[in-house]
Image (cartoon, rainbow, N blue to C red; front, side, top):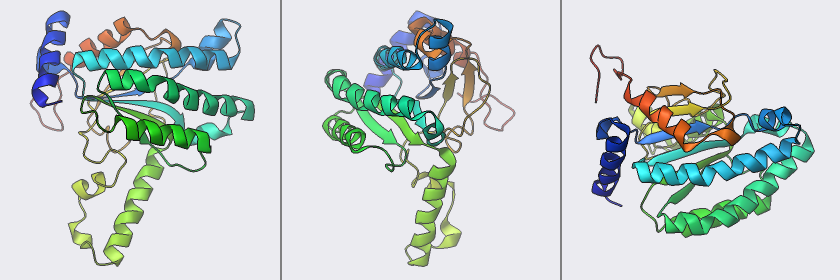
Length: 257
């Protein structure tokens, strides 16, 4: 999809929301929080909260496609989440593999590319197979990129990038003095992507949780008390409107468009 196609969608969305097309973010990162609390408040098992939360992803992705958003990254499972009870982790791994199998036709229909952000080990083979197949099958698409941060930790991502650069410097492939922000960015999972414009976090938690620390340097934040399974398209529109109201300065004294 060329930039003109994204722009057409942004123009239509902006008209509906009463904002300007350039106030639609290109890159949105979401911290999907509150599945367990949603279930507990309803007297349900935690796994039922995860099941309900998974149902929100496709509708949100479709909405972001229609809005002209170019990159949507969802924080699905952090490296620290392995500390959860084994039964819950096992269910989540099953859910990810099954979900990826089921969502592929929709991704193809909507021209969405899929990307995995995170370390591969120790993800189960069935999850790796599902990730790899989804990346491969959707690689022909050129619309919105949907990223799953699965077994992800931002500090680990940066460490991996630095290790690669250190080895390249040792091998004489790069001058250490030439290592700059661009060089580090080119070795992150999001290499070639623009920085995050908007971070959305559900369930009211006011923390970053080791998520895309490099990429969110100048991002705007929208935190809602709504738990992830109840996150609606209306709530996403509220996030977009909140973003549109911000004056982004990037360290300058004047707002940037």
